[in-house]
Image (cartoon, rainbow, N blue to C red; front, side, top):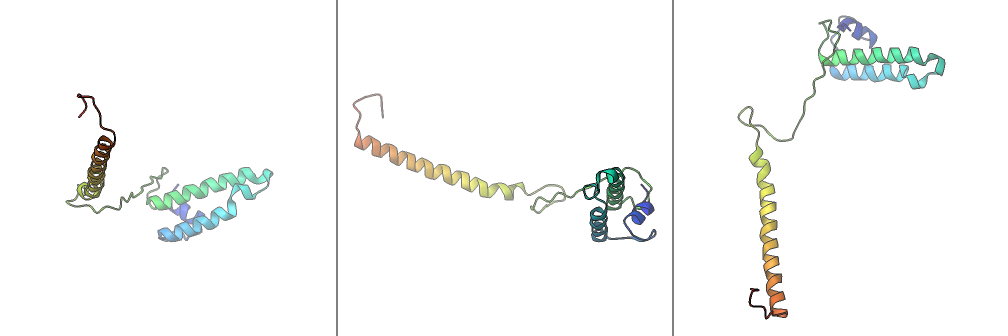
Length: 134
C-alpha cells in the first residue's frame, strides 16, 4: 500500500504528514466504524476486507513507508530496559549485578551463621558419644 492511499483511507489529505498520535487516533476511529463484529452476518465479509485495509494503512503510516510505495510494512519497536547505557554499546551489567550480589552474599553469610549456631545448640543439648562425629 502506498503512503497516499494509506493517508486517504485513514481520513488525511493525500499530501499531509500526520504525527504518530494523529495516525493512532484516526486508526481507532476508523476501526470503531468498520470492525466486523459490529455488522450483521451478511455484511461481515465486506467489513473484514475494509478492516484489513485500514490495518494495513495504519502499519504503513507508522512504519515510515509513507512516500515509498512499499507493500510490506516493516514494524520496528524500541525495547527499553530501564538501564542507562555507557560507552556506546556496552550496558551497565555491573550496576545491575552488584545489588543482587549483596543480597546473595548476605543471605549466605547470615544463613551460614544461623546454621552453625543451630548446630552448636544441637550439640550442646544432645551430646554424642560417637567419636567420628565432631
